[in-house]
Image 1 (cartoon, rainbow, N blue to C red):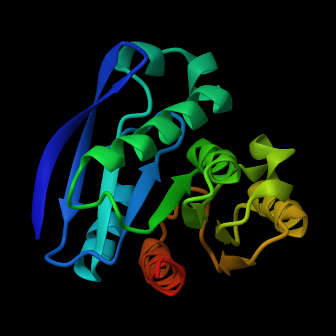
Image 2 (cartoon, rainbow, N blue to C red):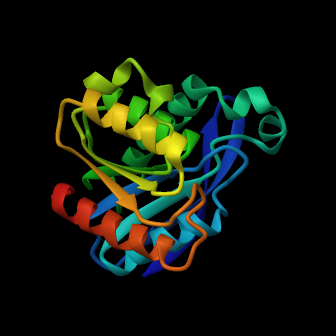
Image 3 (cartoon, one colour):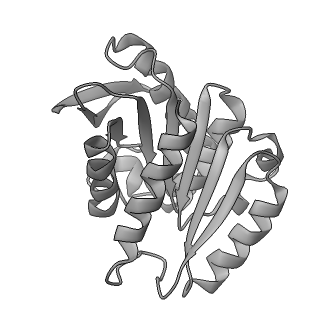
Length: 209
């Protein structure tokens, strides 16, 4: 496995990222972090490390600059986050090791909304996994998402669970809702994040072929 720091030009600024490559990657998963988080999110990095060990390349990058991240409005600007995610997806075409790989998105919280919106726009995206996502912020694009979508929600996160149930009913392609018993929004309970790290690789392995 190799890992390297990268910089992706977006709206006049260089956004830092981390690209991880297994020896023979079968696909690449781009991570869209949630509000108040970054590419350094320990939960996302944990899932990314599991994916790499199972043969998937991963890209974690900062959707917002530090100045933007200090503004609550920018954190919830799903249109901006979606555009940045699509820019990072297009950037992959200039990276020889991953240029031809099947593409997936892993989104958390507001990042999940950006992942779903971007998947509705970018037909190259084959699979989306959302952890504790806010798919309601991706309406009305949900019905245009063709990528296979896995929604993972904590059983003790009732409001977000209700939003994901409603979103699952709107999605028209392959979709599944998985509820992790006892988990809250941040999946900090023992075994909760490990459950996510089992479900996500299986989903990407199945649909990034």
